[in-house]
Image (cartoon, rainbow, N blue to C red; front, side):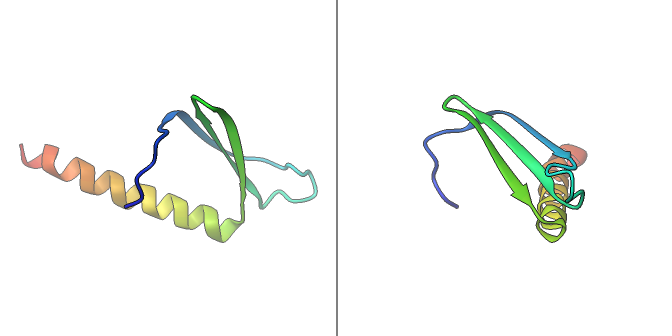
Length: 67
């Protein structure tokens, strides 16, 4: 895994019509100590991100379920 020197303080993701002519675009807004970074994702990219988050959350929850 990539080592990063900055970690996120707060992460939000939201579907938006920005730009209004492209409602299929999802904007991922990441806030760190260095400011806000916005990323425009296609539908396919957004679905991959969601799938990865779900897989990671399931893996993280598994040890707690066994305890």
